[in-house]
Length: 143
Length: 143
DNA sequence: CATGTTAATATCATTTTGATAGTGACTTCA
DNA sequence: TGAAGTCACTATCAAAATGATATTAACATG
Image (cartoon, rainbow over all chains, first blue to last red; front, top):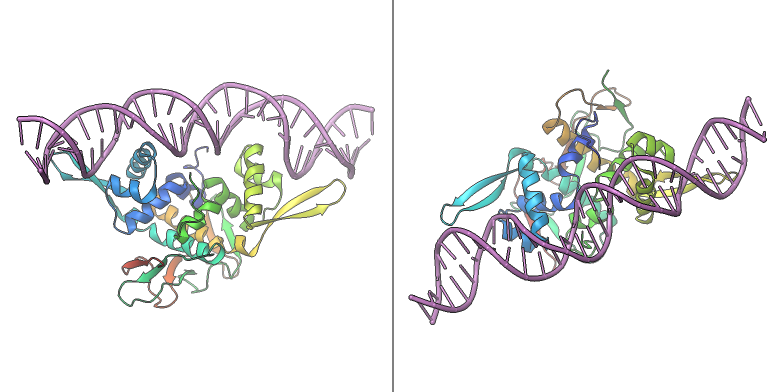
């Protein structure tokens, strides 16, 4: 896929850093607390070559941060940065879509850890409070 | 990437249908009103082979619908289904992330077509009203 | 009838993916 | 002390996906 990073569309910009399934699944797992290479590998069943590359890209892009947790032997883990943590809403909303339209069979549920209630994610416009998709949207292109 | 469609995770399920950048960009353009092969091709600069495949997949997956708009010559266009329209919030939220963390230079803005105000998308839990990401989340796995 | 439009295919080189095995620097167990 | 295990990778190589470019089929238009 060509370079989208200079596109004026913020969606395209977002996709340049996290535009593939593995990266999103890594971010999902990281949001659930996984940090180590082998944790990701086992959780995802991903080939180590791909995992190495994806972790490196996510680190370069500033969504993950390498942190040394052992000097001997040298061992690094990957923790979310602020940008990485802020990606969670996108994933949760994608999950809500998946549940709605691909929800056959038993599915994992996302629960508010304090109240124990299932989360019902919706995207709203913070200005009007309206659910996104219920009002027509226009694009204002710069210049 | 292996088959995620039987995973119990709704995010993974979602990614099986729309887990790549081109598909998301096609959905973005479709949400803005594009319907025809050549409109997508010109807007995205995508190779026609790839576009054909992506449109076919999105159609199979039920996010787009082929509609004949001319019998002679036979011509089809692609319109969003309900599932396809409901994907917009995911894209808008991804765009909000992109604006926040990759927003250098002039960027397109998404505007409420009626009020003219810029949209500020946030994901909230419809139950508690809390912004997603501000409270800890747990996963409940089935069985 | 020459040209243009439009939704594609065909071809083929390049790139990416993914499976599998191996490595280096340790620690732990017997 | 030696064998086995852990962990974060890298090497290798086959298979699949991507992408650039040219071409086609079925018309409409001038």
